[in-house]
Amino acid sequence: MYNIPVKIKLLREGAKIPAYQTADAAACDLSACLDEPVTLLPGQSALIPTGIAVAPESKSPVVLLLYARSGLAVKHGIALVNSVGVIDADYRGEIKVGLINHSDKPYTVTHGERIAQMVVTPIFRAAFTESDNLDDTERGSGGFGSTGAL
Image (cartoon, rainbow, N blue to C red):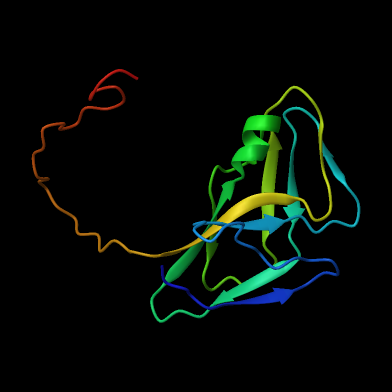
């Protein structure tokens, strides 16, 4: 395991520094930083502030990826609006998490509640080269379900 230094700026009173919940956790938890609770009705989404901004200090490029917390998703149907959030290493604004309620019941997000997971990971950028030919593979141009049952 390699630790990448990341500066955290607390932007709001009551903001929490992201925390890993176990020694081997790959993702740290982000917490809501709210002045008042936010209730998400079924099918409704909202942008939830965390009260923090970050600055990764890495010699190699990194990206911070936001994911849903499995407990919120499985127990309450709460997930990220865009499935995976991308926080570029050069972004210095407040991290906000777009949450959506996929359940049939209202859900209230409260201040300090852990609302998302964040992973810091290296970036590999593609060096695109236009080509008239692509290498053949066993799969070829087979799409959804072409390698087995859906």
